[in-house]
Image (cartoon, rainbow, N blue to C red; front, side, top):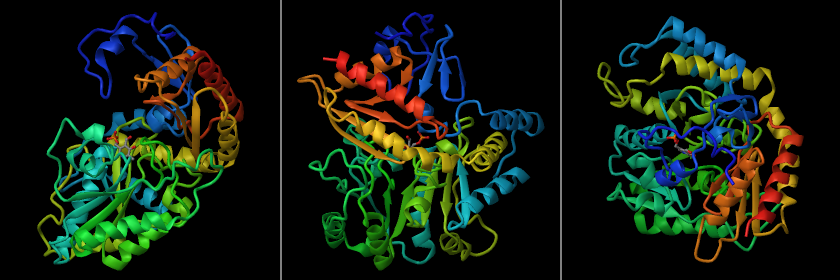
Length: 439
Ligand SMILES: Cc1ncc(COP(=O)(O)O)c(C=O)c1O
C-alpha cells in the first residue's frame, strides 16, 4: 500500500518521536526535498503536503525569502547568547512580531512550542509572586488539549494517553471539559453559545478557590486533539471569568498562529485577547526551530517592579533568539505580509470547508469539523482495532500522492495557506477513494 516502501531502507539508529519504530522500519516514509505545496521522495515522487509539514510550513516549503535569509544569517553571525547580551536582529524581530500582534507587549524566545508553553506557565506563577500573590499556583487546562511534551505542558494538556507513562506530573492542575456536544455533527459554522461550558469552569473554581489559580490555558481552537472550534461566546466567557478572579488567560497559539484563521492569530480573528500567548511552528515557517511566549505590557511591568540589578525572570534557553531563527522569522513575516497569505487563507477557508463537508455520507465518516484552514474528519473505528482504519486511509492517500495525517481514526488536515482550490479537490478525491477502498 505504501508507495514509499521502495525507498532505500534507512539505517537503524534514529529513534523517531511519537512513532511505532518497528512498524516504521517495515514501511519507512522518507522525503528528501520539498518545494511549495509538495514533498519529494528520494525516488522523485511528488506528494501534496496537506499538513504543512506538522502544522508549521504555512508559507509553503522552501520559501525563497526564508531560505535566502537563513543562508545570509548563517554566514554573518552563527551564534550569540541572549543571557545578558544579544544581537540586533532579535530586537528587530521581536518588534516586528509585536507590530503584527499589537495587543501584546513583550516577546520571550525559546525553541519549540513545548518550551513556549512551559515558559508561559512559569511566567504565570512568577507574575503572581512578583505582585505579592504567591498563593496563586494552580493551573486549569482542558480536555483534549495538547500543549507539548515538557512536564508543564504535559500536565496542563488534556490527553491521558500522552501522560500515563510519565507521572507524577505537576500537582494542582485541573481540567475543564472540551466545549463540544457530540450530538452536533457536520456543523458549517462555530457551535452555538452554551452555558454548560462556563458553568463547568465555575464548578472547578468553586471547589478550588479562584484566588489560588494562577492561569487558565487553552488552545483557542483545539488543534491536534481534533480541531474543535470554540462555541460562540466561549473565549469571551473565559476572558470575563479570568478578569473577575484575577486569573491569567493563556492562549496556546502554536497551531492557530500565523494565518490558520485568516488573521495573524486566532486571538485577533476571534476578538479575544489573552494575557500570555504562545507561538512556534509558523513563526519561522518550520524552517528553523523557534518558540515565542508573548505577554501583555501589564504582565511584563509586574516583573519590572523587582529591584533593579538582578534578572527579573530566571529562565531561558541557550538558543533563545538564535540568529538563524530570527532571520527565518522575519523573512517568514515578510512572506505572510507582502504576499497576502493571511488574506489568501481567509479566502479559501469556505471552499475548503465545503469541500470537506461534502465527505458526509462517504464510508466510515461520522463527523467533519473545520475552522479556518484546519480540518478533522472523524471515522468510525473498526471493531477491536482502534486507529487501524485511519492509518490505512492515510496510507491510501499517500499512495495517491497526498499527505494527510491520521490521529487514530481521525484524519487531520492543515495545509499551507497557499493551497489552491484544485489541491483541496485533489485531496478530497484521494480521501474519498481511500475511504471506499478501506474496510
Ligand atoms: C497547541 C500546541 N502547543 C504546543 C505544541 C508543542 O510544540 P513542539 O512540538 O514544537 O514542542 C504543539 C505541537 O503540536 C501544539 O499543537
